Image (cartoon, rainbow, N blue to C red; front, side, top):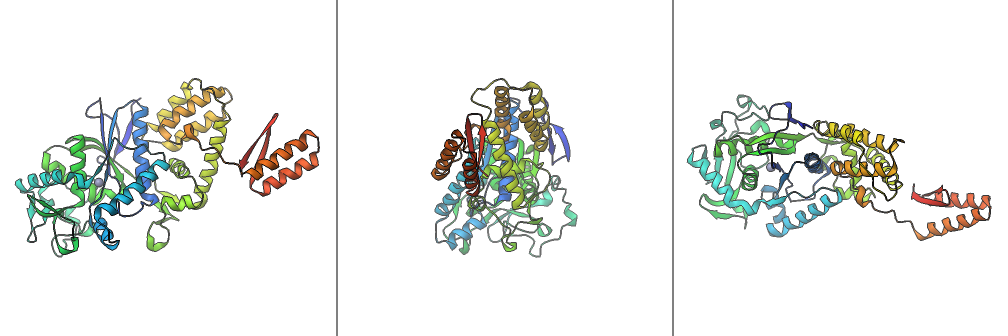
Length: 451
Ligand SMILES: [Zn+2]
């Protein structure tokens, strides 16, 4: 089945054709490890994971690289605040990130690349750009990319250079800047006192890389000069991805990534997430509320990745209830695994292969669950097959732990039923319910679940 993706570069849905049919070269912008990622960041990583799963579902061999930004303004600033070395500080948050992605059923990429392991590659690209006179050294020793030298600058984000205001100083030092001020960007930042112990002595001077060059260096070092797919959040499109294109294409003379794919914003209560607005959540906030992180994944799958998703707690709780129901229905299918229902699979794949239309794909999943013409064993095989793309974790559903006192009451109730004391049996059912559990009779046995 041909796969179609919306390519940000052309603003069109295109049939996916990798440069090399044997291997899809796929790069995703990963986290900056200076804090716990927020749930909006995880939308980007879950999107990349779904994309990879869909490619693999369609039998592509995918080489996926995701970076760990362990050197930038924020990591330096906050490691100093914490009186920790950059390494110690960033390693802590890297480990926390790894724990989170496991909880979200994100399949680790082929390789996680740490920016600090690729300083040489960054220096080499910068040297090439200096030789080509596309980059220049400023008075303090920092090296900037002259965007006027790249005629195609703006082709991804459709930013028009003439519309941009010149920055008063002509260039901006920080990694984070407002797009109205975006002009030449730093490839290399000369050391100054505020960097403390963080610097590298290199052929282009003493300092550290700019943020954008990190992704160009890590992707090209692992995937070659040309990639098939590059993903990130829509917030990365400008300036980050625009700059990646500029420096990579100017250095190699080749087009950098064939397809660019971006997931939309995650809003919270219809607002942009911000610590100052009090609507900033990490995965820990979900876990603290007793919500399974996979419910967040499930909730996101209900929206198309290119539409804004509005996070409200009620919606997430609703998704969790639906997910638990799905798990229960799956468990009721028994132990036998039959054949994948072909008709359902074709429909499912048609949707997910149409620019990852997961909301429609989920309707096929529910249809399978409800379809009385498909045997239990075949349903099970079909759901497991779909889950390769969805990542809901049917294969390792966590069994609900039922507390001892509830099990005791349920046994007493069973006894009352055997003695045909239905009054007592009903009372016990009510007591169980008061404690937050539901008892459901199934022939000779019964099932207890959390309400
Ligand atoms: Zn990046």
